[in-house]
Image (cartoon, rainbow, N blue to C red; front, side, top):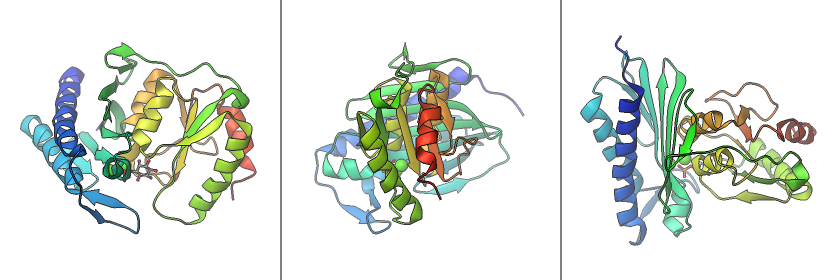
Length: 264
Ligand code: IPD
Ligand code: CA
Ligand code: CA
């Protein structure tokens, strides 16, 4: 099968993100009507409209690629390329006007991470990474923080919509890490949280039960910036795994040691 120039893929992905952001920002100050996918899991017409335009932009260049998108599911083809899309990450924030949400597009080649694009909104900061080429915010190379102890760290986590065992464990972790760090933030858009570790605004991020579209782009950006990515027990991270831990690498071991006694 023919390989496509990475810059071409990146540019189409950026074009798709920017088209989506026009739809999202036009709707940001208007009244919103949302439907519930679960008890507290919301979807708006903006999620749907954003996803439609992203897919239209991708399809105008790559008719044959596979796509996995949050709202419309998967379109699998024999292509080596797979686009994984969260058209609006942080929908709850968007609905309430809380300023932390974004668009996330990961491009995978033979199921390996290749390109990550996250557009942070409403402040419109574009994070990008191509495998083996570093990570960038607005075209400027980014790297994680140099904080090397938990007591000096600021962390961020999130809580999914299912309030089961993992959610309860995370409540315990939230309390413990709030006690032994400078604080734990809970902002509500996983892709943005991950980019904030990649550029050193926070020192680490963990969460349970994320979906592939929440992390597909962010993990490429984090890896290329120099972050360490595992699951919460420090085993290899899988996109379909049930936990993720991303740190500046320097606090990783201490985090895992501290978390261990709270895990089942
Ligand atoms: C959610 C956000 C949130 C995380 C949830 C996700 P959505 O995505 O990333 O930070 O805690 O687990 O489902 O529903 O806003 O796209
Ligand atoms: Ca999401
Ligand atoms: Ca979403």
